[in-house]
Picture (tube, rainbow, N blue to C red):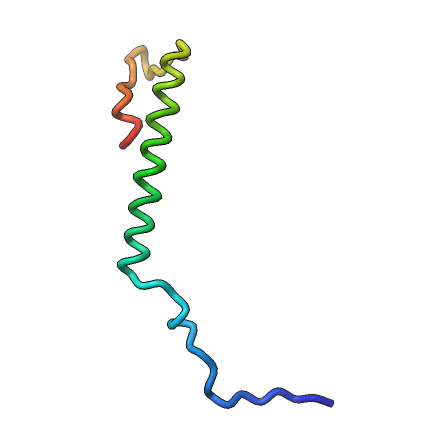
Length: 66
């Protein structure tokens, strides 16, 4: 029969989490990368003559970055 006993010297979970600044920086980079990729795909679609319209009004390419 084995039993486990905690000694109170376990590493805290908070120490393993990244800092808020690092999290914000990575989130901002991911958002910027997603905006660039979405805009590029819209530009490629427009070049391939795919209609990017809503209610017969064309969506500007720059609007996809938003």
